[in-house]
Image (cartoon, rainbow over the protein chains, first blue to last red):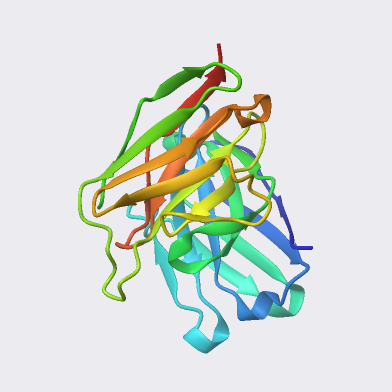
Length: 120
Length: 112
């Protein structure tokens, strides 16, 4: 059974940084692309970014809203995905979900999410 | 970016009755490989999203057959043949044809 468990959320001031983690199990993590998707309180879903696998040179892609501020990385030896968030803005407040990439068909497997609150 | 527009945004339904959600895209969703990557997700209150349907009409494993997807080009529909209490929540369409992938605003389904 695929399990994705996010951690690292919390309260941070505008301009601050936070690093989210996602622990994966139940599948061959290193073979898979992985994504982050977020949801602001009471709002819809927004794709944040993706990291490809080693065979695809760990290529990353980001939404325009976070490009240059957020960095996705992975440690295949630890079956872990990361989201480094810098220069955080109030509008980055959201639940951040880790998801196993299903290509253009979206995501079948999701974590439970971790809440990031950006506020002074 | 491709804009996905859902309607209605709120859908009160009676148990046992059908329901239908429309999703329209600002560009056609036929990929260069011939596939149409229009997917549907359901999110119950307080839960993570769950994919219901991928590539317009393919139900995911465990999804009841009362859910069906249809459409082509820029116009797509999710139908529930007979709404059950567990179907409440928000439904999102999502396109995976054009980068970046984008979602509709969501349609909230509630029981009358």
